[in-house]
Image (cartoon, rainbow, N blue to C red; front, side, top):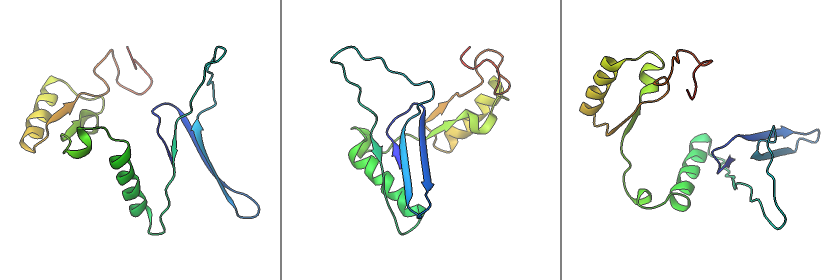
Length: 134
């Protein structure tokens, strides 16, 4: 199961005493609140559930097909997407201009079309406990 939502969420699965499985997914209730004025509404995110008796690979394929056919917008639904390299995977916090230029040069030779400069470019961020969002 997946939630069509980019915010905090909670997914749970449990097997009870009679060996029935119960699954739930939704907006994470921890510190969540949404104030509604009279006559206003709130629509929860949609949940997507799939089943496969052919393993995780088939389940992943089913999710991908569903998202491609029903959730992706044009023009990306029917054309190839650009090849993207995220700098985090290659450098984490340890990069400078020289490393990034070298990474971009190698990426270009491999056909990468977009380089995303990820975490670490702001403030003095050198670990996961500082400067996020500075």
